[in-house]
Image (cartoon, rainbow, N blue to C red; front, side, top):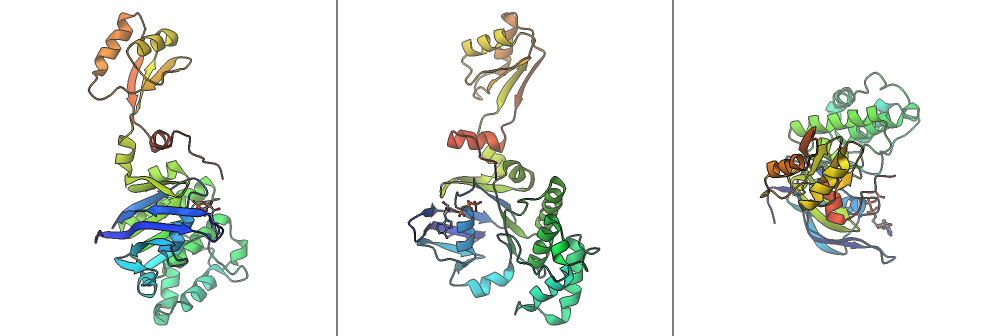
Length: 314
Ligand SMILES: Nc1ncnc2c1ncn2[C@@H]1O[C@H](COP(=O)(O)OP(=O)(O)OP(=O)(O)O)[C@@H](O)[C@H]1O
């Protein structure tokens, strides 16, 4: 077991009673201090994994350690150090935002009642809800509800935050707010584990990521490495795209895509000198206006891994 890991699983498996194998032999390592994106299309097993990590359901096989301790056995010792936002916050609509937090904190046996009011006020401030603190929660927008849920997770200092699809259903402004809050928390040293089905979200906020598909882990590691393992695309801008495409194919380029004033192809391997390709184009009379390699995105990496597009719907 990796002692520095905040979350570490070995062969973690969940088969539901109906027979559905939701998580299949998962080996996950979440380094301390990371913002770790747990990525996968709907139904790939993310929520099931999170529920096992938090001791809400038992695994069928395998083991999980959170903050160095076995789950679910050590749940009582571990969970006070973990802030969670899973499947939307449970709020009382008839209570104000502030009263929701006071009530939530009062239900936590590890929370100090003497500092309760001050902590609630500070947390409301931190998530930008001070002005709306007196409003009933049912009058909150979806983004405000989500921020209130996050506030509940932040009432006490946490070593780990586990957020299940924290920006799901939010408008772009709401997403930005949650993402910048996540970055702030990470900068203070909290490890953040968040699930998402949005590739660009993971690229924007995460240092590390794991990709799930159909209950299995496809890959995990630093986000920069995941994309770097995939070749970028060579993009040639030219008024002669058909000729350029022909020359690139002759030169052995793969996956040549013809556009109106551009041609792209899979970037050649590192041992191939790009200048030679450019010379071949120009020698064949292709007028080259632009010649560049675009870095691979996480989406390219995902497509390369699975051979299919990422389902970003839902
Ligand atoms: N309580 C349950 N009983 C039986 N099958 C379940 C249960 N919960 C989830 N599943 C199934 O397990 C698989 C994984 O679901 P899970 O919710 O973990 O995926 P997910 O990646 O979190 O997707 P989503 O984003 O839709 O929640 C799915 O096929 C789902 O239908």
